[in-house]
Amino acid sequence: MSLKVAYIPEHFSTPLFLAEKHEFYKEANLSIEFIPVPEGSGRLIKLLNSKEVDLAIGLTEAFIADISKGNNQLKILDTYVNSPLLWSISTGFNRDEISNTEDLKKFGKVGISRIGSGSYVMSFVLAHQLGFQKFEEFKICSNFKNLRNSVNHSGSDDIENSDFFMWEYFTSKKYYDNNEIKKIGEIYTPWPSWVIVGSSTSIETKSKEISNFIKAVNKGINYFNNHLDEAIEYIGNNLDYSIEDAKNWTKTVEFNSEIGEKPLDWDKIVTKTTNVLKDAGVLKDEDDKIINERLESNVYKTNI
Image 1 (spheres, rainbow, N blue to C red):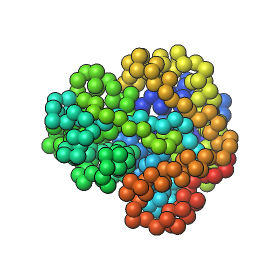
Image 2 (tube, rainbow, N blue to C red):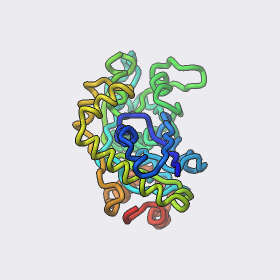
Image 3 (tube, one colour):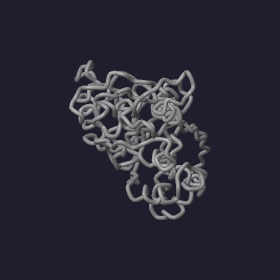
Image 4 (cartoon, rainbow, N blue to C red):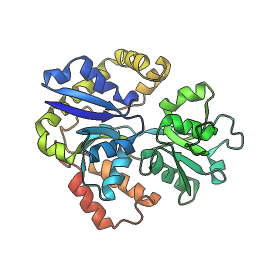
């Protein structure tokens, strides 16, 4: 049986492909088609909604926000990465008028991949840290390359100019090193950073295959943890990172090596994320009781 799995082609995907290399899927009688989605979690949600993929791995806050707003086409299965995500705050390399996050009170056009994506949600968290409710202007850029062009005002006519954007730190670092963009700050998610999410339809029709996939991913994570040199080499050879950056990243990341083996941490994944989304204004028009009902229905509490 085959599964289509959407993922963001960054270093966090490494255990998935170590599992493929060492035939953990094959051992489980699975054929996996991986669908790379550089646009981010917003695009993952669209693919799940349209049933083009069975599973997706993306940012916690984007999926919690979408479910809270009424999307019942997907279900969060469990945490994929336990550690928080470090978002880097970037502007154009030659934007001398912007040197730190305080300057964003004056230059506040936010580049985002999509409304509702992680880059969108975290802008509300940043605004709260800076002492105001939200940024007022959002420029939708679809992907990381367009975001870099947007802050440098160097894109095509269909990419709007922005003042800053947020993206994962180690993915951004290469472009600090080559003087394409400039780092002006950083911010951590207040929750574990990545989750595995399934299409509601696929969970009903392919439950055994999904369970076997999860077991194979656990093997891939354990292999990653015990063979860091091989993981670093894979990242350096196959993804857009230097060996040094890959090495440093492995010191910061903690994957969930027990996916589906024990109940999801409801407080960390659901309660904490939802509370921050409410405080940040992302869910300000939603009724608390309805939000709770939606989350109760669409986030797994027990083993997969």
